[in-house]
Length: 212
Image (tube, rainbow, N blue to C red; front, side, top):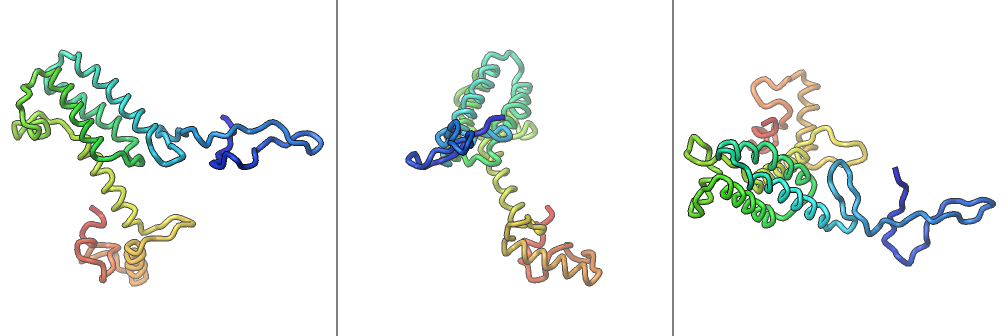
């Protein structure tokens, strides 16, 4: 492990180790201008996400290089893209808010690599790439669609969090839901006849979607 400081004020006092006899020791290096990697995701301290975007794009193009030179059938190519490339690229998107416009650009690169390997016609409508085989499509997953789904799940999960986190205030929705759960618990009602945990005053759509 490495010890470093994060100080955005270049004119601020330098942070140093404590030396002998109360004297200032060696300076601790300032990493305010360097990205930090945590759990596989790069965080820029200016919240730009430029490092993660660059790393993700580089990784995508490296993986697509294997697709372009593959001699596999279209079905196997789609399987490789859906089970390897898409999950690899969407993992950091759980926290990195990369713009949808760039995700569409990456989807275009994925289709181009697939088309080059499978020799599909350039005139093939984009929708055909993402339709299932049962609907006479090629069965590819869309990176942009996967990212949207992940963000919606994250948003709904945080909004419907009825337990809360120590030191963090619950949202109004989660407070209302939690109140309903506490009320049911005190009354001995375990959700018979209606969605367990939903307060009677909660919107019907919310009550129906809490546990879906």
